Amino acid sequence: MAHLLVPGSANGAVLASQEGLSFWGGVDSASGVVMDAHHPLHQQCLAAKVLMLPTSRGSCTGSGVLLELIQNGHAPAALIFRETESVLTLGVLVAQHVFGLTIPIVRVSEAEFELLAQADQINITEHTIQTKGVSFPLEPAPHTELLLSDTDLAMLEGQQGVAVQLAMRLLCDVARNEGATELIDVAKVHIDGCIYAGPALLRFAQQFEQMGAQVRIPTTTNSISVDYANWRRQGLEEAFGEAAQGLADAYLNMGARATFTCAPYLLPDAPAQAENIAWAESNAVIYANTVLGARTAKHPDFLDLCIALTGRSPRTGMYLTEQRAARRIIDVPYFTSVDDAFWPMLGYLAGSLAPDRIPLIRGVAHLSPNQDDLKALCGAFGTTSGAPMLHVADITPEATNIAPQTDQVAVLSEDFLAVWQQFNPTKVPVELIALGSPHFSLTECRVLAKLLEGKRCLTGVVGMITLGRDVLELVKSEGLVAPIEQAGFIIYPDLCWCSISEPVFPTSTKTLMTNSGKYAHYGPGLSGRAIRFGSLAQCVEAATTGYSAETPPSWLI
Image (tube, rainbow, N blue to C red):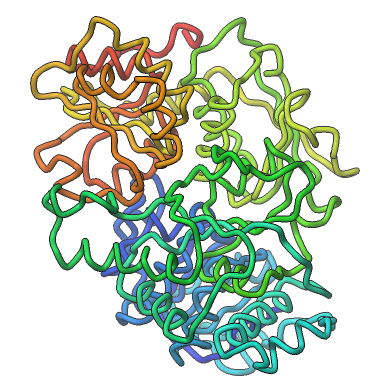
């Protein structure tokens, strides 16, 4: 049965893919052109098309990109999914509730999806979805009754102000769409919507700020699009810098903390196991659920603020123990030893093998991954999977939570080799070393400083590290800044590689190298540059020689 999740009518050419798509890092917010170089729809334009995807994946900021496209007239005419989807749906709900704009969203069965994906044109009305010679009835999405507390009802009725009322309306819509029967209290929020993806995000935040919105629970902020204190000295365009800083300021004025990091789990007040939190930012959500054992849905941008203003979240998905169970087992071949490049490659492979469900990875416990390895694993997993967590046997706290019905797949050494080759397509000089996606940790800075002892970047090569300001203070306290900078690396707080822009990103760079599986995937589309990938030690070698390793890691040969 086809269900109309967001009402509306549309007609357009079909653009279909069997692979989920992250709008942030994958779609240009000004034009609607797919810029994810690894996606089957690369260079296709989504504008005015009926876009068919299994679901979304990747960044929580996809909701902001879609809102921007709706406002600038380059959005898809409609969205059709075959699985549950929340990030892009929330972007449409915000457009509807806050700005009076919308596009229809439909969810269909697998058989209907396969049939419609073959069509040239689709027409969506209030009651039907039609293509040449075929018509399906459209039913409203089935909703369970949402039981609200007296406090919830008071917020919904506007007794705590118009900002809280609007936030509660959005929360209730999302809860009903996701089948939640109630809302729950959460202890912490991490705001992802402070990354500047276009004017729509700024208008949204400033509208709530002007309504007098104030967060009611501890709220941290994600990395932003500029180095907050230094962007003018760094030569950024005034209009862009002011907009990006203005977006950050709006959230700070609403009571959020200026943490500006995409790795809030590195902060001293990281959540505890089984603690209910509400985080946005895909790598942080996956790490919190997977490694910390905290409980958070993969909240889209905009919903994060709604939760911060109300302290409430839909009780569904990752807040329920049964929903956190592994539903696919991934067996990994035995490697005697590996380097740190193994973990992002494994995360990337695991995500591609489990794009729509939580996996359990087996066969790596003897490699004793540290927290930085797990950070790299989670970051890369989120680029290829829409799942909000994974399990690693004998390593992560909930790895024994396995669903009664699971299937099993195996990763081969050849699969790792294919990923390495995908991330290293050509042998070309390297001019930039990109570290800190997700944000660098104190321990990574220690390791880097050790690797740089007695070395310096080759003339014409620059190393750049992005990290959170709290970690930077720790790095300073240990005296690590000077040796890292003397070796030719520059440290940037507040921003991250997924939001960096020229001229902070050197304009003359043609090829960069990274140790991040996440940035190896998104980098070509975001930067327009060629990418090389390797371990942290290989990145240092490339910084000093101007070339990256030509052969795969020794553990893979």
